[in-house]
Length: 121
Image 1: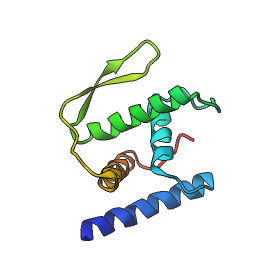
Image 2: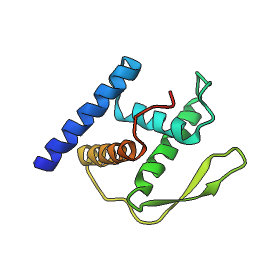
Image 3: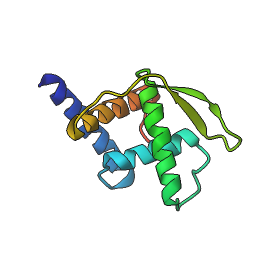
Image 4: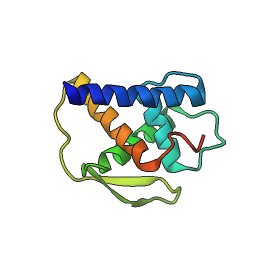
């Protein structure tokens, strides 16, 4: 239970940082979307995204996050500078709550690695 408590307290701190920056409490999907934008880097002035663009950005975020644990590997970039990943191993089979905590933990690791969350926004 201690690891769960640590994850929750770290998550609340990230939510607090997000709230200070955007004046909104984030959900996991919102944070994935913003990580995707941060990873692509060429959308900073774009205000509206299509549903497909949002899904693609969230996919980039998930692959980026899970590459930290060896689930994915960056293969390269296409002509539009979008990253493409190769899956290296199967993802763990979790229920919805476990899956969300798995993603939250990877999100926290990502921000610990880059410093200030959402500094590019």
